[in-house]
Each structure stands twice: as structure tokens, then as C-alpha cells.
Image (cartoon, rainbow, N blue to C red; front, side, top):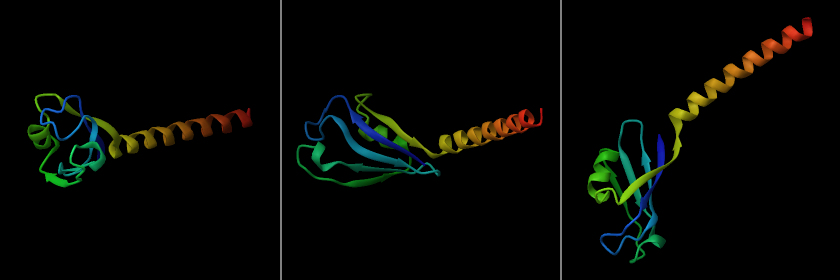
Length: 102
């Protein structure tokens, strides 16, 4: 799963605001959910919409590059980093054990 902020550089509609206007979750199967932040839009309304993909979400709300995604969290990358850290710890533990025997 990945989490993003939907960030508007320019509000072409005049209602959705600028800055981080929504939270987006992208699930492992590609489905994307957008949750609009009420305090960031002119009408003060929050809503939730499901899209088949992040690409589809941006086709509707990207406004030709005036809105983009800022990645907050990528569970796949976290797992990769955890694996790397575990391998480093194992290597360090092995080196420490060799040093104690020497």
C-alpha cells in the first residue's frame, strides 16, 4: 500500500483549494481512494471517491499537471529497507563474533 497527499499548485475550479487538498491510499491491487480534506476547500465538505487506479484519479483531478501526488508511505519500500537492515545486522553480528574469537 502507498499513501499520498494530493497537492494542488493551482485551483482551476476555484472550489477545491491549493496545497495538500486530499489524502490518497493506493492499495496493492492498484485501486486508489481519495479523501478530500474539508478544511482545504472553499465549501468545507469532505468526500471519498474510489478509482480503479492512481492514473484514473489523476486523469480526473490532475488538471494537466497542476495537481500531483506527494508520496508519504510505501509499504513495499519499507519491507525492502527492513530486509536490508536485517542483512546488515546479521553481517555486523558475524563480524563482532569473529572479533571476539580473535
